Amino acid sequence: MANKQKLSWFLKAMLFLGLAFLYIPLIVLVVYSFNDSKLVTIWGGFSTKWYAKLLNNDQILEAAWLSLRIAIVSSLAATVLGTLAGYALARIKRFRGSTLFAGMVSAPMVMPDVITGLSMLLLIIQVQTMLQGIFGNTSSFGNGFFTIFLGHATLCMAYITVVIRARLAELDQSLEEAAMDLGARPLKIFFVITLPLIMPAIVSGFLLGVTLSLDDLVITSFLSGPGSSTLPQVIFSKIKLGLDPQMNVLATILIGIIGTLVIVINYWMMRQATKRDREAAEAYRQEKLAAEKTN
Image (cartoon, rainbow, N blue to C red):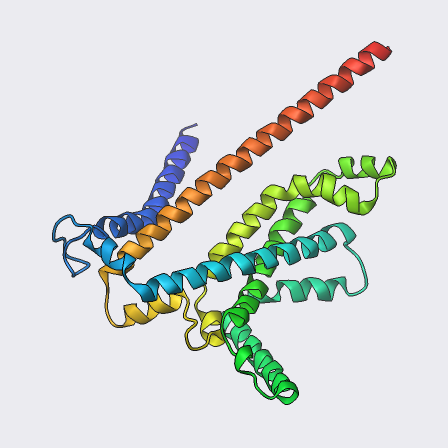
């Protein structure tokens, strides 16, 4: 008993230290975003002037808008492709080339970002060369939004596939089998039964894709062109010149937006799970009453 109590206190202490290691720097960053001093490590009093300067910084605002558009579009595409790939790997399981398919889908996840970015860049150069031979002028096919979108969608798809495949692997297939016995077509079973059951995993995968896209720097550096700098690129270029209080403000805003989004999505997912549990319990109760009346 004493050993269990010691172990419990040790685990609690390790948990506290781990959370402190993660969140204390974030708290300090948020506090210093209201610092009046230009020196980010010296407190000069409370002020919101850096928030006003950030809102008037066109370079950062344009980069943030570009990053947000790329993140949403690439995550949507990766979610659709990742859901289909995860469904194929989880439900079809064994088919000709399944091992190769699984390896190709997972490759961007385990491959260094430098290799992924370089390979995507070489592919785009080859495509641009081919288009130049056909159309002559390839100015409209230069590196920018579309090339970054391709790289981020490729990267995010690998992670989303893993999330969807794991959810499908633990999903009870009794409802799908019952619908199939009643004559429902596979496409209808997928949209009516399977898709609602894996919707929390799809939403989680989409949020993961948005986070990965907003966070990416290496692949974007290979695929971006003039006038298409994303937010991580702008932040990295400014940090190399020295610490800027506006970066603290930008990080604080991102923390607030992402934190609020995560809380809202988690609340919605919990509500959906509770609703499904109530519906399942009600269905079981109705089935039990029907069985008692029959007897």
